[in-house]
Length: 222
Image (tube, rainbow, N blue to C red; front, side, top):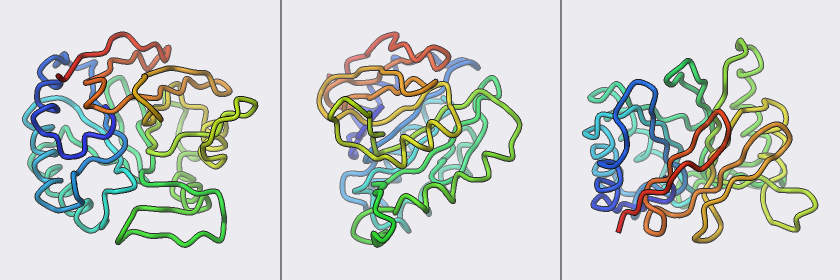
C-alpha cells in the first residue's frame, strides 16, 4: 500500500481483504500520517497491528518530524511484534526474505541538506551509508521499500539515480515504491522488479508476488 496519509478507515477496510497466513506480509511506502503528528502515526500503526499481519514500512517525505515517526514506530513494535519499520535498516520477513529500505525523499545532490523536522529528505550518500551493512549479509531473497522512485534510464522519467544504483547493487527481487499517478505498474530495472503502487485512496491494497514482481490483484478500498 502507498500513501495511506492517515486514512485509517480505508486502511482497515483494505487490510480485512488481505490473507492472514505465515507466507503473507503487508508493506507500506509513502506518507503514513496525515500531518506528521504522533496521534496520526499512532492510529495508523495500531490499525496495522490489530490486523494480525506481518507488516513492514518506511515513511514518506511528509512524515516529519522524524521524532514522532520513530517514537510511535518503536511503541507499536513493542505491543505488536509482527510490525517492523525498516527505515534505514532491515528485518526478515516470511520465508527469510530480507526486507530493507529507507523512506523520505532521497536526493542525488551530495551537497543537499538533510532534513527531518519540516520534511524527511536525505542526500543520496546517506541512503547508501545506511544500507551498506547489507553487503555483509548472506544471500537472502530481498524486498526493498523506498518512498522515492528510481530513475529509469532511457524512459524520460524523473526519479533518483541513487535509488536506481542501490537496486542495481543489491539486486532485490522486488522493490515497492509509490506511483506517480493513479496506476499501479511493474517494470524491470536490472535484475529487479520495481512495482509502483498507486495511492491507497485510488488503489486500495495491491497484492504482489515478490518472487516474480507480478501484480496479482488490487483490492479496492472504496
